[in-house]
Length: 157
Ligand SMILES: C[S@@+](CC[C@H](N)C(=O)[O-])C[C@H]1O[C@@H](n2cnc3c(N)ncnc32)[C@H](O)[C@@H]1O
Image (tube, rainbow, N blue to C red):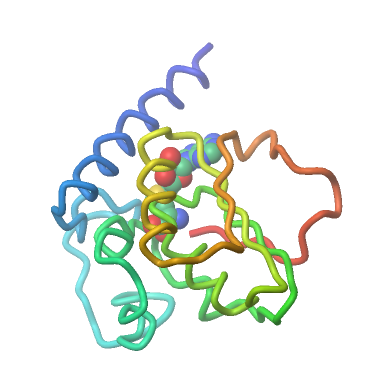
């Protein structure tokens, strides 16, 4: 009961963040789970300014605006063409889209999220990015709607 209540509060927070990003407002440093007022140093995949200019160049502005993560898992993960990747709590889809380019057309990337508005935003970002090797799934991280051993790499941000 208490867990369900907490989850609803979390979902409501991300519902607002998704709507804000979809409207074009930047989410930078406001709703991130990393806290507020973090300094933005030059490209560092762990601490700040997570995405390199060449990665951002290929992404829809709304995917960047919706980025709420604490790092850049795609900079740290070893992703190979043809692999299947699962992003837990995929939000607006930034890491899914970057991973999809890395695994290429023979690979596949799933984004899993529990918030409808984030899924809408992510699917719109996928459409804008023109990527077909991507699928966004609605569900809970605690109960992943995929069969066992069906992915090669799991990322989360
Ligand atoms: C901090 S945001 C990060 C979004 C994205 N990974 C990024 O880096 O921008 C967390 C996301 O996880 C989702 N989420 C949180 N708890 C979840 C759960 N238990 N199951 C599925 N999704 C969840 C939220 O809806 C939200 O979109």
